[in-house]
Image 1 (tube, rainbow, N blue to C red):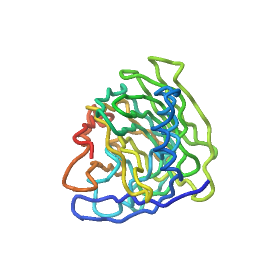
Image 2: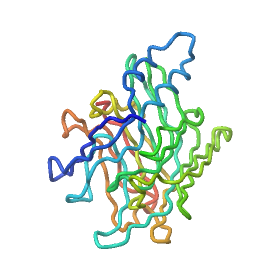
Image 3: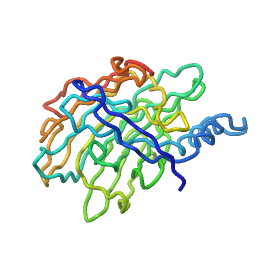
Length: 293
């Protein structure tokens, strides 16, 4: 697979720029744009699916190694659970539930919003994740579920879902295999489970667990600009948990709980999506859309 480089830069609330991680992306920005201009013989869903095949969802948000636990990112909003600095680093399961939000799409252009749970990515260069995505193209919204083993493969779109569907996302690791599952209890035909092995370079290290709303990348050939964030209102994550060193726990169970706010690339003082305080004894939170870019 041909690859280009892109940077996603993470910020802390106390430091302007913490650092950057150079990440591979799938080549084909031109092809992705072409899919939006596809023949009228294609349905809107087909155009949307074609476009998604050129994205990477669930990119690591950057090296967030400076002072925490409150971070800012160009593309992530939500929470990440990490081990203590001197502790172990084995996360073997993560899950969360939500009702698929309804998008208010702009009349033109492209806007995206992905929702997922995953292992790795906060402080490592792989992510094993699954969830749903809202895709606004030319004023029309499409909704899908998907999974990805970043950077082993591209986004794997599975099925169409609908606003209001009851979604459960989970990732678990055992015996060298990751089991990725999205359950749509409103429309069971859209549910899926897949078992995947991690690639060897880089290796998956199971160093974090995440619950994230994301603005996927990349709208430029250099791979540095995320797409506008689709106006999703509020993403209400519930029933969140993770397993760390063999013990199941909540988001608030730590060892270290990191809160991530999505900010504009043009003005880091401008918030795009804001996670609220942890609710229900640390198993839930609301993530609120604030701005497209």
